[in-house]
Length: 396
Image (cartoon, rainbow, N blue to C red; front, side, top):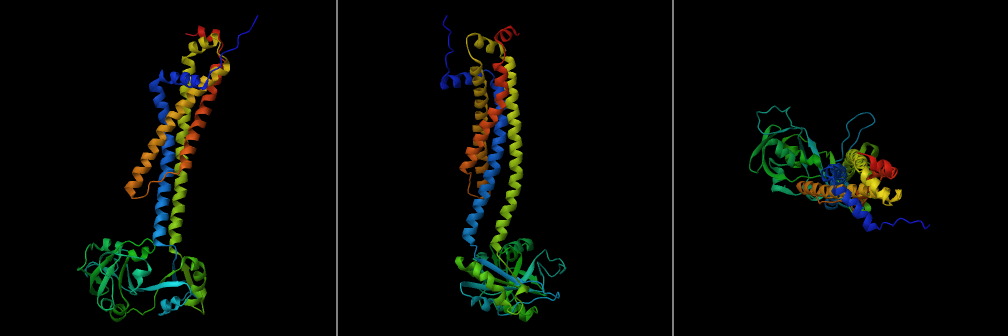
């Protein structure tokens, strides 16, 4: 007697049988796929938004440059105040590779909107005497008005940083603010300076008027230096000894662009937390898929018994239900990729960032979806394949 071999299922047949099983329970399939979609969309959005922010930071650094160094007084061993030499900028310019050097000096005065505001109410703003070439050294630009020249620097004129203007309620030039004990005319308002946020919160005046009318001693408190990209590290090692040959250990040298990079690193930590939440959402979606498939096995016992009675092998039953699970997860994954991409693009455009979603994220998220689908479908598939045909057909 010749035994009959079961007919093999081609991949196209497997896909058709799996899809037919999903079409029979549309509402339940949609709800299960939604769980997967939410998890994938969360992961794509979190990584995409973070990548877009980092791309914006890189473009910003490329525009602003990473060759800006800042020199400030540190702390003396005995706790005495440290002062920079009045000619600190000239000394720094003599270093090979230095292209620009400018200074500011903190003036012991406050800036207020009117003379009726108590001088203790500073609003976190400072008054800084500035050299005329500060704007070019910092690659800054005017938001409105004009920068200092030799004549204006000797007059009671002030240029406000972007934050200072906002806090003082000044939106145009030609008005006056109270600096120290006298009125100063606002001749300009600066645009934001990401590499020098202390300038954003300052009211800038010329060195001559600061010394003549506000008792400024002429010692700068900050030197801003630009050098060629290839000589930044070498110049950084020479700045302290140049500014203070006798006590270089009392001088602090920093690189403002490092602060922006550190901020991006802190954002990465927060991104990792949100990515973990996305993984949890994906896990919950996988549980939903497993639950749907288990219920499907219980509801379709007669179908399973009939297929087994007609010659379907246990392996073919396993493949059928595993395929359903994979198709269900893939459906949710595709929806999640689309939703995550839309969220990333919308948020990035709203922030003015370049929308960026790394290709490896899309590939990895979809692979994770299929992995979740496979894991979620293994138990239901095995359970379905082990149902005896007679018991399955006899079930109500």
